Length: 376
Figure 1 (cartoon, one colour):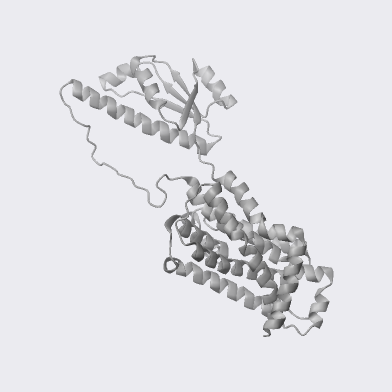
Figure 2 (cartoon, rainbow, N blue to C red):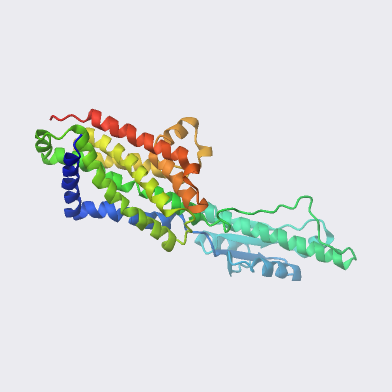
């Protein structure tokens, strides 16, 4: 292999990328644009959910319960229906996502200790928001009940905190606030960095479609020199997007970066090598740029969103689907990205996924060189 011939192909392809504004934007800015768009769509934390209250008891205890419930910032109480007909109208219009119904006799039942009933009606057309409302209403209702029981024990001379059989203490590591964006955005960075590989899939298809492949075939350039020479410029151009995506995650979505930046950049190079090797392998068989771009979209975006653990946990996947997922480089880099962003993982802790990326890249680069024929 001649390094001079490889650099000649690299220079030719780099000139093409930089002179073609569309290709350059696709390689440099499209991962950031996809990250901003998809990040906003997938990682908006639910808060300030509108809740209505129908108080049919109108007692001091029911009003105290409403005050306790409205003390949270996660719920907003703007609707106060007078009967069940108004409750139905509010839910139908979407003015509230949940309605708390306090029935008549709530205070009397609570005081007698016979069990006071509460009803929560939720709009099931939006399960995420409904689940958010249910969790907060349930937690505040339990806290309110325990406080009232403790006060009753104090009044009858049985002071002390109401003990529970088990006291559960929860502490979240790596993401103490349990913010959804801290998990979603680093994984999404791993998905969008596969976008430059879509441009690499056009490398040979474009030459074939424009008729310039004949000139390359007539030169003494070997197959390996041509393929490697075409891979390097796209890899370098894709690497320029990595710090932009990291900056967008850190400063745009306030996601902490706990790991080593140099390690992340180095592993991103390996990931780009794996994805672009697959793209070049695809371009060997694609007869047109449209076929190449559609094939790469199916391979990288479909697998990235649905088979990388971004949206669907691996525990819910069957063994065959899980095997297919780990054959894709995006799956491994999503785990790497999350590990470095949130846990500050080291190379030793990620070496299995790194070796998988190296293996995938080497395999498809070898297959590309073997399958590409220097003839029409």
